[in-house]
Image (cartoon, rainbow, N blue to C red):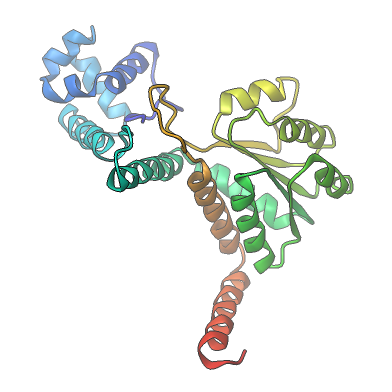
Length: 285
């Protein structure tokens, strides 16, 4: 788990190295004075203070408190160890799910979500491509879009994707979900959609691999990528590290952002809930 998010930091090279060292040595950082930490990190105390302020904290001490609390949380909840009974299994599942949800949300760019939500809201048609485990999050997102009368379809093969998206153009939208980034059907479908100029979103747990396989020849205008955060420590011997909670939470954020774009949607969601309650408890619509 990243204690300090290093992406989009407005720091120089030295300051970036200091922030990275905080991530790598949280115990030392939180248990020593600013003079001792500065000496160990080979910078001056004034540079250390400046780094802390650029990270959004008022002081070195405030940064220490944040790093301490988050590193303790990592030890208590995110440490996956060998399974030994149901209690340990519950701990493992809780740890991976909490990590995925918390870190995925922490990494989300609100402006990017607003852009994607607006694109989907204005799209004539939406297709969501998800295979195997990803069919769960894909189906849930499509069902939500249908609730607000957005023409959405979930597909599970390159054949059905092609049959649906062959009619698509820049006024439509495609969503692709790939946990590993290695799924050939999804990668080739992304390339095909990009060549047609169709706006698209990619959800992946491995951004580096996904970008590499897509290739660098594409213009990423109207082509968006969000990484779902999962526990990828090579030392973990745990059979099911799922990206599904991250996918679901991203789709929930996008869906609720779409709803916020039209007050009529909010009223319809309330009415649909009332209809369900009437049927379940009073036997009529």
